[in-house]
Image 1 (cartoon, rainbow, N blue to C red):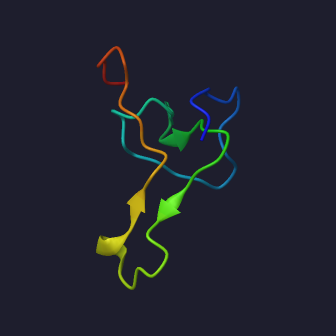
Image 2: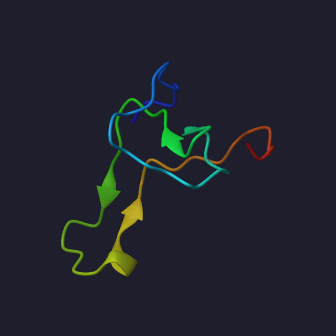
Length: 61
């Protein structure tokens, strides 16, 4: 998984986690790709965004 931020947000992906490195103003995701797991999840609560990476500067956007 790459840690570079895309210059454009992923189309159709909404992310409200403003402490993530990939968060883009407007609640968008600037990752080049996202990974959601685990494979056999059966509820929303069981899922996890494996792409999440904390902001290095710890500033909320």
